[in-house]
Length: 457
Image 1 (cartoon, rainbow, N blue to C red):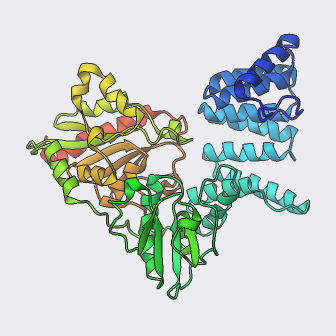
Image 2: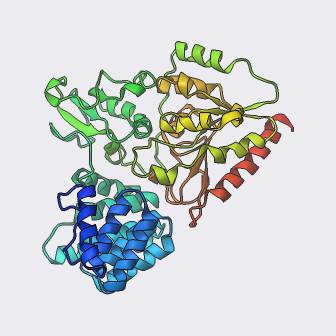
Image 3: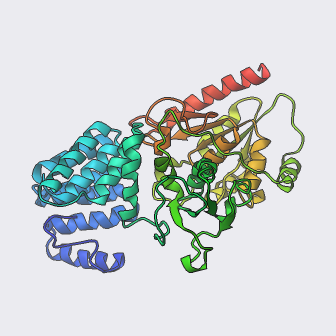
């Protein structure tokens, strides 16, 4: 926010009302730097970071010493993928407002998203030391940023401790606690509720810990998304409850834990990540997949593709791309592409027109993740940008090439082609320029080699 506090994007007005008010302010005084920056905040929130950058730059023409505007500029530059410029803007904000809590937080976010984890952690330590000296406890948002940085570099021991700070964030949407928290110890016949949190992929990721919970000697109530119930029906649980069901309607339980807290409760390290859980694929889903895909063509590689995760996920624009990029894989002789995409991006297949014949759309046949798993069984390889299907394929042991953003989900670390969470997954990483071009070029070259290895072509 602009540090002068005169124009705030959290004023209680709708964005349209605030835009109208800002237009009036700027018409009366076009040299109002705070108003320009607040307009930039609105534009950033609407998903137009380049326009936001221009507004913040205009604001700095008239208020060059305003730390808040420099910090807002750094945020917008980071959103636009101009990471080095974003870091430079945040450095200037820190110079001008070294004790401003919002400036400190924004700078840590930019440093983490730029992959500069050591600098981010050092800045967080500095901010926390100042808070402690002032007699204040560490803010949840700083601990959350420290959790993400620590987990990204593989410091699971400390990272999972900080990971619990997510419960204090305004954006946290997990089930509110309604019983004593489980400490990870023996259950001794008690009943535990394992509550769902975050997305489908997170639930698949954490399912590997459910048998370990049961082994603690208690009854397990498992909160599960309907779309996952069939594929996770083999989990050793005593009852399944619907996500979001009001606490009074749930069966009685003694302790509870979020599924996302299980790695920390079990003291997970990079060397002790449990293998993926065995999934259940009903026969009717297998029959559907066999009918849809038909008999195999000799010498042909069946390659599934996914180019977007859930569009409502805040970070999806960074991890996703377009179907058009995947068409280069159809250039490889002996490769047939099958779309596993669900949701609004499915429309991109139909939008290809006649070229759409190069991609077989399976999305209309996928009613839940059990259906998707059955299709995956019939494919030789999946190439995709990160989403829940990556966790599904990795859990099944299907070879999956995951094309990931510069700073991806923390389980993928920050370097290398592999993750201990999914042994059959290969990672293709963006560079600091956030350019997908080299990622797809590397994957296409690898696909040519894979076809030669499998078919001799």
